[in-house]
Every structure is written in C-alpha cells, then in structure tokens.
Image 1: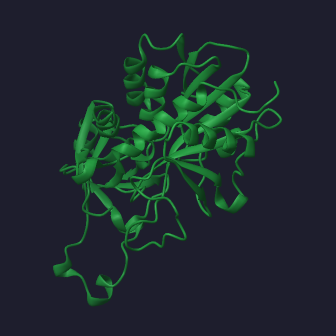
Image 2 (image 1 turned 135 degrees about the vertical axis):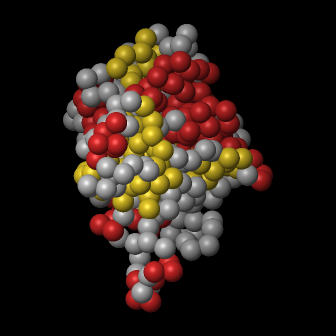
Image 3 (image 1 turned 135 degrees about the horizontal axis):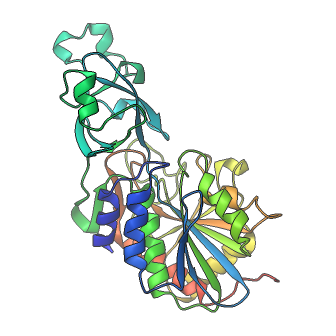
Length: 346
C-alpha cells in the first residue's frame, strides 16, 4: 500500500491533465477487472461485472496545481492557480512545468526579506506578486524548453515516511483515495456489479463524476476521498472530529447540508460492516468541502451516495499527511460492506 501511494503521489496530474495517473491505474489494475475504458471527459472506468445491482465507487485523480498565463520579456512566468490553494504557502516552492518537450524544473521566486520594507513583511504574499523562474533569460529560451501559455504546473515533492507509520507528500488529496479504490478492485469479492471510476476535474467543480454518474446510472455510489482531522494545533476537534490513526471517516453531511446529506441506509450499511468485523471507523459532520458524492447524488433522479474518507492533515499543501493504518482500514471496511447488499430495493 505504501509503495502504491508513493507512486501515485509522486506522479503529476493537475485537473484536466490526468494522463500520467490514468496510465498508472491501468498498469495497476491489469488482470483484476473485466474491462477498463476511458470516457470522453477523461474518466477511467474499471468494471467488475456481477448482478444487476450496481455500485459506483468514485475517486478523483486530479491534483491542484498552476498554469502558465504569461511570459514576460525577461523569461519570467506569470501563472494562475488551478484548484483551491492557500496562496501564502506557494512562494519559494520548487515546481515542475509539464511542457511539450517534457518536464522542466522551476521555482516560485520571491523578493528576499533583506529588501522588503517593514510593512511588506507584515503582509501575506499575494498571487499577483508571484512568478515562476525556470532560469531562462528571454521568452525565446522559455519556448525552447517547450513551455508556453497554458502549460500546467505541479509541485516538485516526493512522498516521505515519518514516525508511527505515517507518510507525507503532495496530492494525497486524492491519490490516497485512488489507492484505496485500486486495492478494493484488486481484492474485492462481491455479488454486485462495481464501477470503479477514477474521475477527472474534481478540484475544479466535481466535473468528471457528474459525467460518469449520468452515463453509468448506478444504484448507489461511494466516493473514496480524504477529509480534514482536528487533531493538531490550529484547529479544534469539535470543528473537525476525525483523527489520524482511528480509521476511515463516514461523512454524514458535507458543507453544512448545502452539499451532500448522506443516505441513512448507506450509513447503516457501512456501520454494520465495521461493527460486525471489528473495523474502526469515525463519523463526521462537516461545514465545508465537498466530494464527488455531492454531485453524483443529484444525477439520474437521485443516486444514494456517501463519502468514505481517509483523515489527512494539511490538505491542499505540499506536506499532506496520512496514517497508513487508516488507509488499510478504509479498504477493509469497504471490502466487508461490498460482500452484502445495503437495504435498497432495485
């Protein structure tokens, strides 16, 4: 599991440019599913055929990133964000630009503190003041590197093991969910038809999941994703009740009900699987954030849906952190649940 997460995390695939991740998933699932197809949106749909009761399990492949917007006469690059960044974490980071001639390393440059005015030091960095430096001296040298307006950019980060079975890296949102779905499709024994859908463009509007749900018309849906724990300084546990090391999180409500209110029958189905098999799980009522389940449950006259998430610290940063035991417990919970049918009439 750790090797798979590292492989997925270290790979690059900003929203709309998920091809690298699709290729890894195809390799990892070869021989484990009945078929695997890519739809016109770019979603990858891996099917395990069974009964006429169908389950869609969605996990988004994309990560937040940047995109080149302008190249000035000195070869410095302006950019826009793709997905939800907290801007102050960006300056002085190393990045990878995915150009037409391959990957190019760059840095997010910033003004040294030595030349800052006192009032500047008190301000948070703003996107309009940031730029990417690839070492070029002109627009022509930038073009020679294969970089142009529209080139996608991701952070240059490698996943690293920490103490107590914990792992840190980029894009755990949602390569951890992708790893869970891959492992589930490899190990699963179920009577149902299962659509393992690796979705695109979740970070910019849940787009791929909407298209896939409309196409597949599943009876129920699960989104494997990550969620924010409240077990570290700067956040209160009452505001984010999940903790690392205590198992997967069943998200009962997202965005204070403006997003998804999970179907009670699915909650009972998953809780029963956990209780009967002594698999730890946690419950969450969230007031912010959504998953693919939010858009899936509004398709085809309503598809009962629920997110099952791995608690992950420091989401949307270069140092996201998970507990590997939580990832395995998430797989185990879903394996146990998928052996039975929830309380639904076809």
